[in-house]
Length: 149
Image 1 (cartoon, one colour):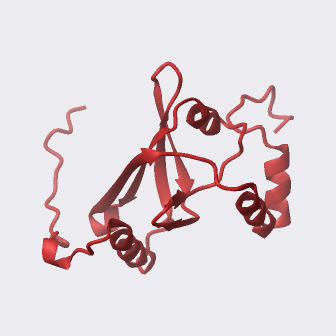
Image 2 (cartoon, helix red, strand yellow):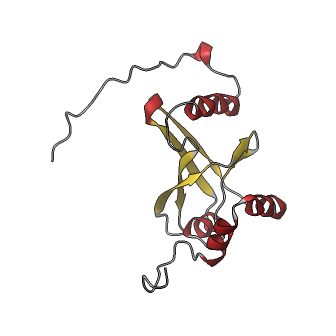
C-alpha cells in the first residue's frame, strides 16, 4: 500500500523562542499541563526506548510518575526486560507524543534507579489489587499457558 501522499499541514501552533522557558524542564512542565487540559487520554504516557547488550533497541509505553530538574521517573518491575536492558546499558530515550497538540518531546539520557524508599512509597500508594498484580507478574516473560494468566 502506497501511503506516500498521505499528509496534512500542522498549523495549530508555532514554536517561537520568545515563548519558550529558559529551563527545558520548566518548558516540559508547561507543555505537560497543556496536554493534561485536553482530551488526550494519557498525557503522561511516554515511549521508553532502551538497548540490550547486543545493541538491539526496544520500545514500550510507560507512564511518567513525576519529574524535576534531576530527571523523569517511571516505575517498573526490576525483573522486566526494560529493567534488565537498563542494567546492561543505562542509555535511554523518552518520547512524549501529543498528536492532538501537534507536539512531541524527546528526552535522551542515562537511566538509574531511584531510592528504595521512593520505590516503596510509590508501591504502597498503588491500589491493593495493583500491588498484588505486580507481585505475581513476571513482566516481559512468556507464560506457559492461558490458564497461568
